[in-house]
Image (cartoon, rainbow, N blue to C red; front, side):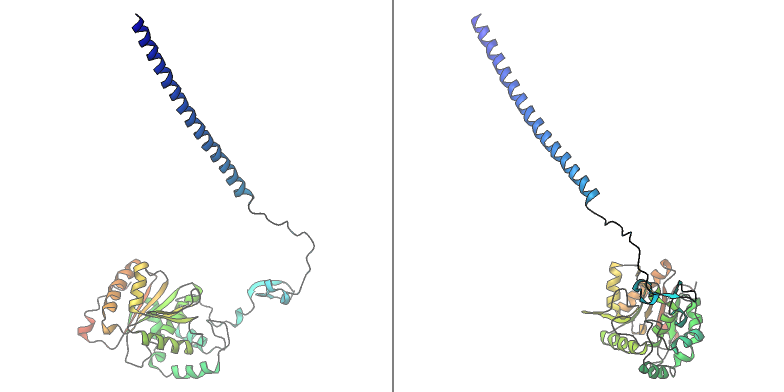
Length: 313
């Protein structure tokens, strides 16, 4: 009997110890959770305070404004005053600009008039005397005489193959004519003219910049291996090697930056040129707004058989 009482006492003692340990652990868990919860609530409160009160706007100035003439106000210098002295939203030099037509709706007569204008349509600056001399030489090139036919075919077709002898103006004049029709600087787009070699790309880019009377590296630039002479947001015509354009296509398969791509010297059939031809052939079906111009020397029947292009739209 005594042994039974001792055994029951031991069991009750063990249960009491276990219950004490259980409640102790439970108390620790509740205290830790409560501390974390309270810190989380405090962090939310601080975050809420920061999100609503971190920005302090100054009080508006309700004092009367001091009026100044329109010509002296730097914020209204782009507005033109009419006879009544009120400002209008029309640009002050709008009547002087030689280009006022929508993109890709241009004829040769309009372009010739813009070329002979005193104001450069691409930077709104007066033409230099050097530009007039270079323009006189450009008028002697065969492409200048066929400008009407070029713009007609360029407007009506998505893909255009140009055949011309060396010295006819394919590399220097065609990209400039496309600039007058595409007006990429008004749409935030680029015109790319590919070249198989870096030396040719840099040399032609310098020549075209002089003929367009713009600064090399700003409006007209080039992109070759280890050298990028372009200005983002300003450059609208770039001479680029085939390899560099392929490298760009790896990151942007649709080449969304470009409105027109000109493949110059495509008859050389380098590996990069052939890959670009296949890429542009597929891209022409996906982007109806992309114009493609392929410049080659006079093709024979055997050579033209290998240049499979999408049908005319």
